[in-house]
Image (tube, rainbow, N blue to C red; front, side, top):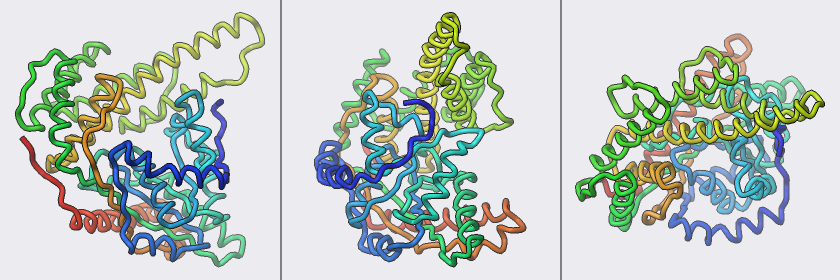
Length: 412
């Protein structure tokens, strides 16, 4: 696939087949997904209306949960996903994602204009509801909703404005939905075995203490080795600060190698996405200069770019790990996610680490109509107001799910 927009398809047979096999996929992943009756009713209540479902993004299994919600509600959704997710398993994964209604976005700056227009079009047409993870990246946290991406909020407001300009009185609704993961007690012995393996891979003495110090010792070892690998001296005082410093340094080094000048941004994840997006466009240019030598240089650029893309993928995993470690209270769920990221980095594969339950809950829908008088004169302030309103609602739904669960909070 090239770097053009990958549009969604409306393949009803593919959607039906995927829903059919979903229980087997979830069983293999040791994940049970449930949705409250109130959540399902909130989605169904918006039938036929222009709707964006806003889901928090704490875990790599969130897309599976979103698809499960589609099955619970007996309707098909559109899904927005990062461009790199479409390229696994020789393009088969991307084909399957596209057939069930997923389209692509190249993250970072500048904004992916084709994806932006697709988003606005899908919202205004209202053929299906649109699933978005407005935090943008996996956060690894279930104790907070991180700031939502401003460009995503702007696109929703622009869609509402276009409906109004066309003379349509239709409202666009935002439905905040939370996903909360409950780790079952059978995860404890499996997590211990995973930590044993990770310590063995790093040459660390195997210990049998509580999860938190073992995980932090493993992270310290990984940081030290990556800092040596990339030739950077880190000055951060905490593990998450060191990880974020490492990621920004390497991203900027790759950008400088390619002559890419990222915009003046300080968020390491935005820097990473911007560099990866611009590299992606450089690597997938359709034509060289028409000469054999030009084609050879183009081939070499794509080959070296592929190596750098793998570095950026690694750094993205480390940034997610950094965010996970920022959680206020250490829990078994945090241990599960940290071990999951460390396995992917250290061993290359993630093991099954015990059963979990993902609980979906919804807050009351938000109409964008009420923000339009402010949008005309104070667009930035309006984006901030929508962000605040949506995050409060998502957090409220998250707390409702937490109260309904009984997660183990400590382990030896």
